[in-house]
Structure formats: C-alpha cells, structure tokens
Amino acid sequence: MEFKHVLMILGVIILTLAPLIMYSGLGEDEGYFGGADGAAGDLIMEISPNYEPWFEPFWEPPSGEIESLLFALQAAIGALIIGYFFGYNKAKYDDQN
Image 1 (cartoon, rainbow, N blue to C red):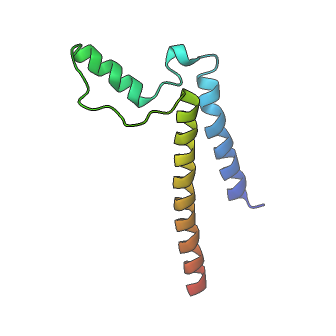
Image 2 (cartoon, rainbow, N blue to C red):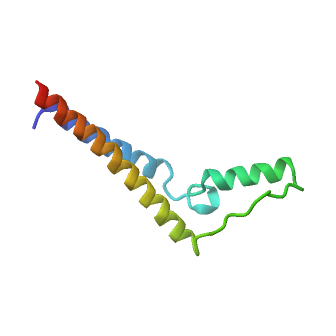
C-alpha cells in the first residue's frame, strides 16, 4: 500500500470521527440533527409571525425516519452518478494513454 493511500485512509477516518467527537452527547434538542428546513422555518416565523405559506406539499412522508431514508437514498443515487462519471472518465483517460 502506497503512502498516499495511507494518508487518504487516515484523512477519511479523521473526517468521520471529528464530528462525532465534536458533537458527542448532543441530541436533537440541541439542534444537532436539525436541518436547514427547520432552521429556515424558525427564522421566518421569528421575522414574520403572521406568515402563511402560499402552497402546501402534495405529499408528506409519514414519519421523519421515512423522510431521512428518502434523503439518504437521494444522496446515494447522486453519489453513484458522480462516481460513475469519474470512473468513466478515468477509464477513458487510461485507454487513451
């Protein structure tokens, strides 16, 4: 295993563990798992308490877990597309050289 691979693996481990250590013990009440949608909704209500949304979504997931699952699935599909793009271009580059 080359040295650059060891550095890359160490970087991934550090990036994985750093948030877990930084937010250790914090839960949803402290906003650790809060999303941008919730923060934006809170800010809008703080700025304009009489604000009413001008449309409602036509479907809402039955629970927060389903919503998280769909979000994770969307992220996984996006990662697959990006990985395929990079892999395809790397193989194309290797074939030309």
